[in-house]
Length: 220
Image (cartoon, rainbow, N blue to C red; front, side):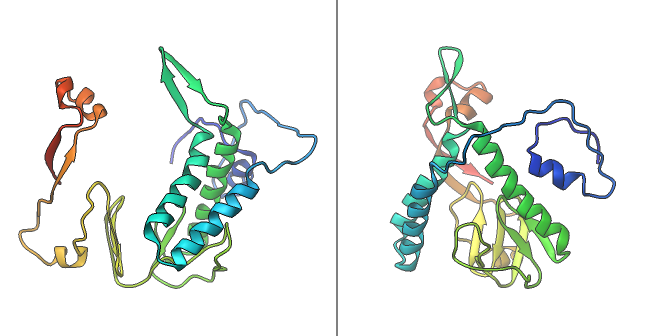
């Protein structure tokens, strides 16, 4: 609820004006016209996606994550700006229009899904968590929905959840079973992890520069 001023894509605009109770006023706009459609990344993305699926089938975890990082990096380069000499410098890969359209279309897929199915109890960047099976088209093709996991689940917060055997504990590479953790006492359990301090943390807390990359015990 509220008023928001932001840049959105045409697809997002079309979606928003179709929602009950939502009013959209266009303040400024940019229309892009192309002489012909080009798909400069289609070949490499399809090839990397094929390699990722092949690695997953062979249970080659190292190569799977390597290819996954490559795919994500291609997208990341579209919107990456690097601070240099007091300025933000873009590389030859900088293409914010591509980045905006990709993220917008994914948001729309997730938003439409959660609005259509009340059984959805949580959404992530490009996925949904549902209490029931959903009548979605599931396949291994690029862009289609796929079933990641199923089973008894618990969600404690953003990036902290467990569904079946799949566990996520943002910031902590722990394999602790959250369902078991909830049944333990006391109600507050501290988890510890040794990791290096980032330069962002050091600057934020006004610590000495020597603390950067210094390994320390962190509890959560």
